[in-house]
Amino acid sequence: MTPNKEDYLKAIYKLGGMEHLVNNKQISDELQIAPASVTEMLGKLKREGLIYYEAYKGSRLTQEGIRVAITLVRGHRLWEVFLMRHLGYSWSEAHEDAELLEHITPPRLTMRLDKFLNYPAYCPHGSAIPNNDGQIDSTPLLPLNLLPVGETSHIRRVKEEKELLDYLQSAGITIGSSVRIVEAGAYEGPFTLEIDGKCIQISYKAVCQIYVDETRQ
Image 1 (cartoon, rainbow, N blue to C red):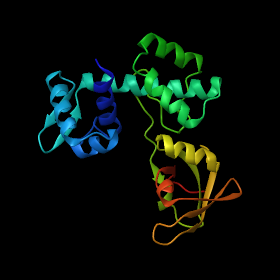
Image 2: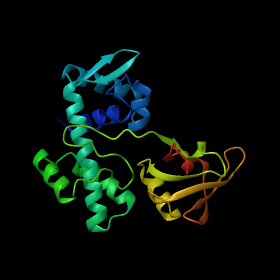
Image 3: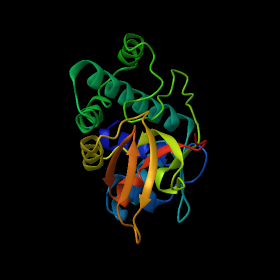
Image 4: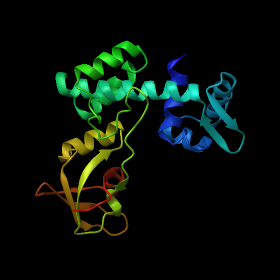
């Protein structure tokens, strides 16, 4: 299977395609690929038995599609842990190189990597790592922009996008940090945050891609 096809399966999985139909626009936006190309590829994946596809409705992974997608996601997130923990990678560097490594990692290497890392539950960006049986933590999270001003929570996940990861890391955002919104700028203006007792200011767009515990503390 080509890396391109694998990227589609992983995208559908991340968009919820194990449980429900994912429409073409969602896939197009996730992969930043033209809608016409998405339609063509989905036809190929359907013929190969990797997805259920209904025109004008969307796609859902078959059991084989789920198996492939989980293998990719699992390998990707384990490599991110390894690259940051042992090779000093930054957030964005780990994500970029894990995108390459996930396509060439055989199952036995994934299993040994998991054991070597002592079975981590989350990647460095806060996304849960599926276990060998495909089970994954589904703890509900809240986009930071929806946290009421003045309430404190903890950062649990950030969206994996290169420019965003560099921006957040340079701003001092880390997984597990306590966070409180001090002030929310009007008309999608910048947010002033208190992170582990230090005040920083970041954009509204970035705040929407940081996720915190639903249960505030």
